[in-house]
Image (cartoon, rainbow, N blue to C red; front, side, top):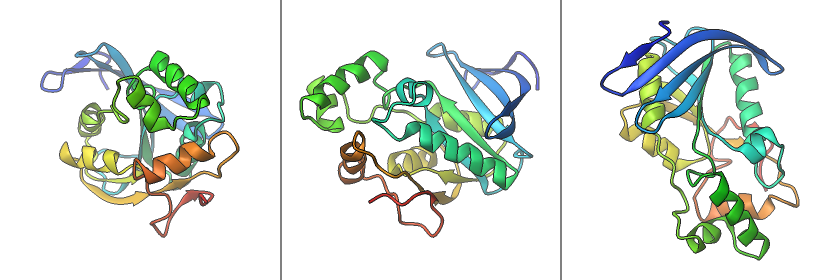
Length: 215
């Protein structure tokens, strides 16, 4: 890959690729600069994905509190780890890591929403109380990354129907969906229930489920 490749139609600059040995497996990482926002995203890849069908794919939105700090308020880090382990086991796949914290509302707003949740609001009500949408993520850039990497079709690792529909709307062919079911704890049980009941996340509607079934 070129170190300063720019796709003029999608306004993307792509970095060189580099090896990424990790506790979850050995991958290749490449960075992407989104010129419209100045955000830097990345893709973590395994094996051959260019021109391939049914590529295991996770589109993962940044979660500083979960991914980095190990917060028990969400299931983000567990989903990230399970997806990377699954891609390693399959011998191919891609995880696109998007810089859109807090379902797209940003870190400060997410922390403010956490405070409202401590007062009894659920994750949807807290966003609305702040004057924000419950779901503000956009998957157009992720679709551009997959097209740039020349992935023909994907097997999407996700519970989120909005993600599924958002990628399809951008022209991504999705051949199947693999849910990720994380065992709840005392801190995230209501959060997971709310995602299922109000955001319509689907945990257990497939023969293949990563992780433990959510109850």
